[in-house]
Image (cartoon, rainbow, N blue to C red; front, side, top):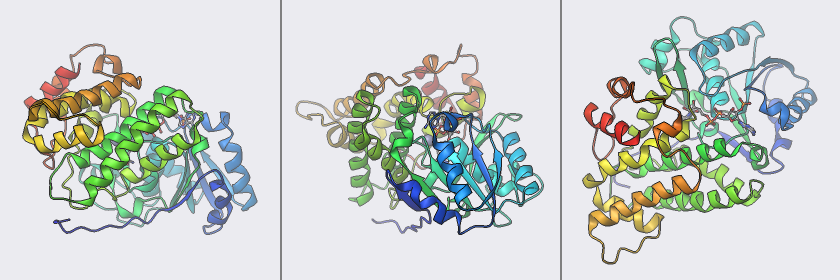
Amino acid sequence: MNRDFEFFNPTQVFFGRSAMESLPGLLALYGENVLLAYGGGSIRQNGVYDQVIQALRASGKRVTEFAGIQPNPTYAKVLEGGRLARSCGADLILAVGGGSVIDCAKAVAIAAVEDGDLWTRHWLEKRPPEEAPLPVGAVLTMVGTGSEMDGDSVVTNEETKVKTSCWDYSLYPRFAVLNPEFTYSVPEYQMVSGIFDILSHIMEIYFSPEDEDNLSDDLAEAIMGSVIRSTAAALKNPRDYTARSNLMWASSLALSGLLSPSKREDWEVHQIQHQIGAYYDCAHGMGLAAVSPAYYRLVCPYALPRFKRFAVNVWGIDPAGKSDLELAHAGIDALAAFIRDSRMTANLRQLGLPDDSLLETIAATCNLRKGGYHPLTRQEVLRVLRESF
Ligand code: NZQ
Ligand code: ZN
């Protein structure tokens, strides 16, 4: 661990089949007005809504509902939630759903207490909140983003076609209730989308310097291995509790900060996906899956030892008789095969892009990061997009 680091994760986690039993006690720590944030209605169908309402009633809360948060939440929705939070005098925002609901709740937590152009201040200029945001609690129903245990709020500005995140310690959920059974009802497409998101979060950190012997890389390999095993089990039986619980915890740990010490972190795949997402509303993890193999093929010559290690330690590939480049490519081929075998989206056409007319625009507007092994030029972003089409 040669680079100095800071580690802090303030989210209190309650995990397992009985996790909901903790909710009334947690709610009791906050004032009486709760803004209940949720999405398009899946929680009403799978019974989670009823359980949450029961806990809110048992705690004597006055509840205002903020429903209809769309996948990939928009800035307009954030402002709507901010107005609602103010009008009901919310003391706590309880987010019940996946990453989109939790991200939107975090943004509303800022919008409830700050005026003016929040988008420019916090999402574009990345300045910290000026007032303490409202506290957010999360009941997770879909795994992948890690939003339940991190300080990111990813929002899309539909007017300017920019999807980006705002991060601050004050945005970490105060608590997260994680019951793997709540994910049984997630449709397979969303499940595998979330799974690739977990893998991508780990790879964005793992495929970056520093390369000295460090625990972060060992942990990353162990979690990737668990995710790969659990994916096969969850695809076979969506109600496999062991698989679902491993996936849920892997998802929360991946972005919790645990894997970051001593790493510079890449995040270019996420930048590309976010910019695709700004133009085409798509499942985040599937956008990552569509571009990852092409991206890693481009980057791997600049970090052969790391890609060889990935092939051997994560995919169990026998290095015998292979050149360094062949072994590195075998690891990326295994990733591509995992994407296909897990019924994930293998290219941008499958993701729903009707043609390649916007690829140049996406490449021209995508953020370029410097933390990876080979910072991309815009031409290279375009190459990745074209190869992924
Ligand atoms: O709208 P609802 O009813 O909630 O339905 C959702 C939605 O249609 C459904 N769903 C969730 N739980 C379910 C369920 N359906 C049945 N049963 C359940 N138990 O699944 C659909 C997708 O939900 P969503 O929340 O959009 O998915 P996800 O968790 O993948 O979140 C994606 C968003 O998070 C951002 C992404 O960019 C995207 O906007 N990210 C947030 C990050 C963070 N905060 O750290 C990091 C990530 O890299 C990512 O950028
Ligand atoms: Zn992600």
